[in-house]
Image 1 (cartoon, helix red, strand yellow):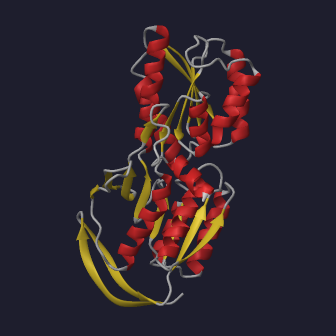
Image 2 (cartoon, one colour):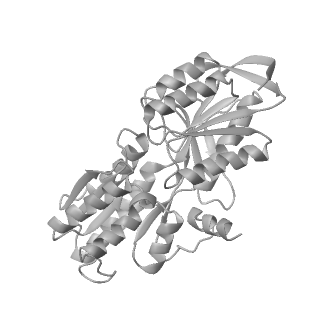
Image 3 (cartoon, helix red, strand yellow):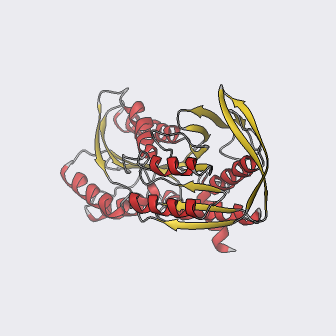
Length: 349
């Protein structure tokens, strides 16, 4: 890839001197590092690839398979290829800072999608408001417990993602900040590491030993929902909604499989992520960077988008674009703007 610098100017952004450059490019190549293509990750990658194609860019993709060291190696390869920008979904929010440092030394912009780094500053993070997502699931769970017991009390299982990643920390934080307001609600937290098999083992163990389990909250319903529903059926804990023995199921993501489970009555609530727009928005802001356009904190609006308005904020990790999540239940599960329904429509075409 050939990049010719036409002009460079110093700009002051939030008190920090930032050097911006405008580029004339024969070809723009973007390096994208995915942690794996399970759950929402395949759609996140597709969003960026398709957005890049629409801009006549080449997007090189790699997958680490959950190996943080491989991800660092892959990003170092992007740097060696002198890509125009690097985008990653970090395997390790702190560990990825090694790659960020190397990219900065090579003057290559660095972006992350879905997860933020920890301990270093990048150009931008595009992600759902994961704290809000956890909060929405927490509020829905509390409402269920109140309706079931007449008061906010009961026992809830939380199946986490990888707690080395900020997305899991935020989804857990939003959920637990709601539930800890009610001392009569007990939360049993188990680390699932975004591993569906681990999720099955956790559900089987807890549902079998905790006779009074009232609810399960999962950091990713894309990863854990199907296995949780099947396992509860196997252990005889799959009472339907409305039954006193019903175990309420809530989670974050809202992929097609989860929406179908909500339709069938097997799942109760999901905090929908605007997955299809992640890559599109990231590509738009990368384009601004390559053109030398300054970007500052603001409110980003798009008419009709469920994630709108989004918040573009300055943080110690750089600019963060927080897209609003949407609490989904039977009443709104058929909204065509939900990403699971978008996925279904695209698959039918």
